[in-house]
Image (tube, rainbow, N blue to C red; front, top):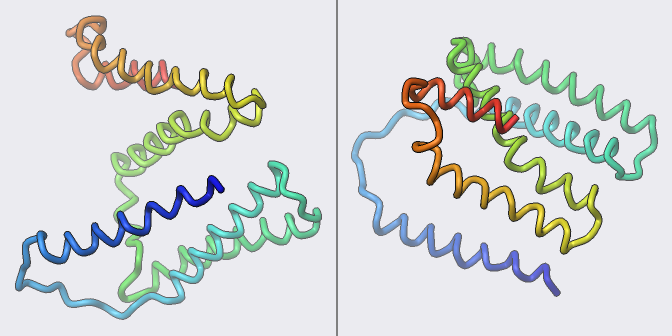
Length: 175
C-alpha cells in the first residue's frame, strides 16, 4: 500500500547517522551535562499530546465531550506544571529566560504565523475542497507563488523599503 512510502525514511536516517559518525568533525571539548529533567520532559509530552488530542477531537475525531474537557484541563495543568518545573530545575530542558526578550518572543510568534501560512493550507484544503485533483491544483499555487516571488521580488518591491520594510510587507501579504 501507499503507506510503505514512509519506510524510505528509515534507510535515509540510518545513512545520515553513519555519515555523521564518520564525516562530522570531532571535538575534545565537552560541556558537562546536568541532571536529566525527566519530569519536565514528561510534563511537556503530556501537555503536547493532550493538546493535539483536543485539537483532533474538535476537528472531527470522535471523542466524548467529557474526554475533551478532561484533555483540555490536562493540557492547561501540564503546561503550568511544565513552566513551574522549568523555573525550579537545575538543568531545565527549556530555559524560560531565553524567551523574555521581545525580539525572541516576537520572532517566535512570527515564525508560528509563517508556519500556519505555509502548512495550514496543506491540512485545510483537502478537507474544504474534497477532491484530490482540485486540492493538488490549488496547493501547487503555493510553491509556484514562492518561486515567482523569489525571482521577481527584487524588481517589484521598491528599494527604499529596505530589508525590514520588505519583510513586513511580505508578511502582511502572506497573512
